[in-house]
Length: 276
Image (tube, rainbow, N blue to C red; front, side, top):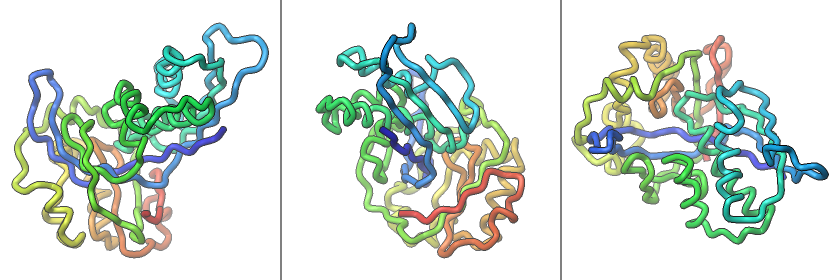
């Protein structure tokens, strides 16, 4: 079985308050985009490996050991409750890591969905979301994989009537690592002046002046290159541009495809996609 975990962008991100447990409450919109990894699962025939699974990773390099990988954690999580056979997992990483695109979370969620289908586990969407949240706050989003208004620590979802169908997304990822911990440490939590849902209900042309990602205020002074990418997207005609999550990827939303976009952002990870 092969599945294609997709990524997401954040549209608006307000860091509302710091919680007593050290985490932060926020509000944002998760919007799925069709930039994908590829995940293949096969049953291991014959002798079972000592670990109970096999993992092969290609594409973008991942740090850590196999046991740290979220798809392995998803497999082990379900294996505790179901009689799953040993499996080999092959993941081709196309979604950049450390980009604010949720690639690892998506891989984990799609692993849960794939195991449910392949082995006929009979899990409901709600149950799969319960498993997914054990692996990461935004993992459950990729179970339903539809735009949501997210609150809490990014784990409380409400449906949102938002469609960017027909718009063009240009996504740029510089070779810069932004520490999420550092990004949070430099942000001053505060309640937004207006609810994000109300701002996004306005024409997209108004978002540039009203819809913000609070992390930009802490990231841009330290990484001027990321700020410059956002400015360039606007120079090219984006109706809205923003950093996704805590970075370091930046996206622009356009009314039409951008010609020769790879040349304009030579040296960066650059992808252009039609939004759905």
